[in-house]
Image (cartoon, rainbow, N blue to C red; front, side, top):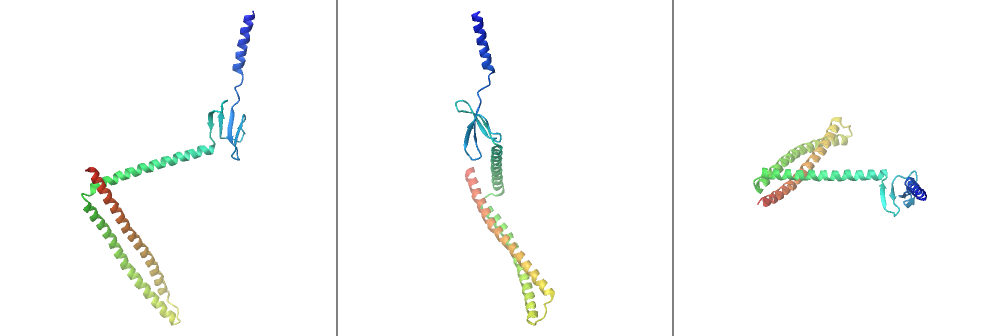
Length: 206
C-alpha cells in the first residue's frame, strides 16, 4: 500500500511539473532614451527586442519595423549595385567585340577619329557662317537705332525687333558651337580610350 501511495505521489508530482508554466522569458530592449533595459514584461509600445534564456543567451531576436525597412533598403541597394556592375561588364564585352570586329589595326582607329572630328568641324564652320550673318544683322539694327536716337526720333519697331532677333540667334549659335567644341574633346578622349583598349586586346590575343 505504501509503495502504491509513493508511486501515485511521484506520478502526481511529475504531472504538476509538466503542467506548470514555463520560466518567464527575460527581455532586453533599448528604450526611447537609447538605454538598454531588461525585464520579464515587455512595454506595450516596444516592438524591437531580444529574448534571453536563464543564462542570458539570445534565443530570439525581434526586429523593429524600421530595422526591417532599413534591411530591405540595404538589400535593394546591394541588388541594384550588382545589376549595375553586371550591365557594366556586359557593355565592356560588347565594346571589346566591336573594337576587334571594326578595326584591323591602330591606324584605322585614327582615321575613324579624324573623320568624326572633321564632321564636327564642318558643323562649327556652318555655325560660324550663321554667327557672322547674325552679328552683321545686329550691327545693322544697332546702327539704325542709334541714328534715330541721335536724331531725337522714335526708333521704328522693325529695327528693335531685328536687334532682339539677332541677339537671340547669336546666343543660340554660341551655345551650339560650345556643344560642338565639347563634342570634339569627347571624340579625342573616346578614340584615345578605344586605341588603348584595342592594343590591350591585341596583346592578350597574342
